[in-house]
Length: 245
Image (cartoon, rainbow, N blue to C red):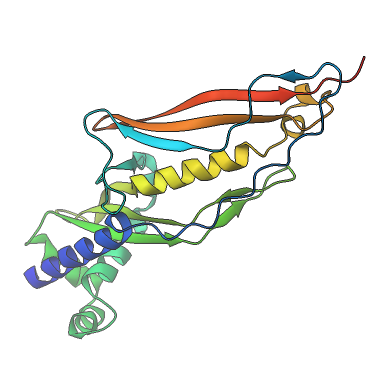
């Protein structure tokens, strides 16, 4: 069984490398900027000059790393205990998938002797087993009630499962690890789209304006501690065209 534990550990390292450490998939070209509004009518209010989308990241303790080398930073989201418990019936499935690959004699042995034997054998070797599950998503859209769907970029991250095998096979913790590059990709993607939204469609309080009401801003991401990433909106502005009196 120690061979199985070592095999799982090596697989975890490889999956973590490919999902979290290596660069994210290439992102499509940013959406074209929103068309400029028509010349202002009477009563036009220009709150700020339009700005091109910009997102930067800074670290309070050290300069940003070279683009070619991963920063080693990221965001970890912990699943609530109630949700972890609901995953319990699938714990043995994940254990079998990680410890007994579909190919090779270990996989055949696991199928013959069964998952329960595998679990009982591991109990004498380790109390907890960590599994890294790769998640690789293509670009996708969220449909809602507005004219433009919310588009999200491709995502590559890891789900980390902590299996307690000391008494029964159950999940003790489940978390998702998102590398810094992915969080910045998502923030940039949202920023580019938000600046193209017409606020008249989203909020009825903007319905009386004659031209599309859009907002412009810059987004800055800063690691203010080892465990806290702060997103700051700067240079917020909007142009609002009032009806002619």
